[in-house]
Length: 250
Ligand code: PEP
Image (cartoon, rainbow, N blue to C red; front, top):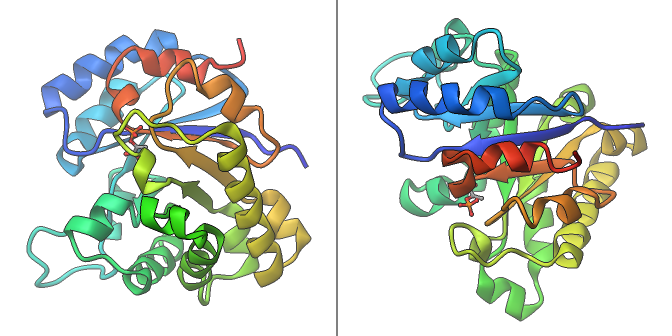
């Protein structure tokens, strides 16, 4: 089955609402590629103006995080109901920065993934090893564990529609991109793990991104790999370069 590529920007804690509108206006004419689903995951306060700015283009607007409850006394959190009402279809879950700085665990990732599906939002589920784990030779074991816990109680139909982002922590924001072989090896192992949890059809359908210092020059080779279905792009999604990444095959 041919999987459509999905290339997503992760703006992290960058861009005020007015800067968001300005950047989307710049990106709109640069991201026309019918082979790719184009998504920008933006800070919560930017979602509504970004949606407005992206109207009439192929850019979808997603969120960077979401809580696993619908409402209540959770000061500062963002509810799935809020995202749905704003028109959000994708949310990043379990980014390594959230795991490192905001105490997210595989268990909270699983709760968020289940909640996102319950509300019809597609999670982009992040996983990735540290440099120490890579050097210790436990990368695949570690990632398999992250995936198995993230997908607990997720149905095969839900899993088939999910997106996984493989992001080696040592490659995020460091300029150190994983080699094509390293990225393909882990994305293949993730697909095999999904095949073991579910079945071949689910493994075939799920989209797996690579993330970690993706640039216009590294994108073509990475995205040509059989198990890499696009990218999650941090720094380079904050500039016009994102257009070159989206048009990697043109
Ligand atoms: C990210 O934030 O998910 C990411 C991959 O960042 P960068 O592209 O800047 O490494």
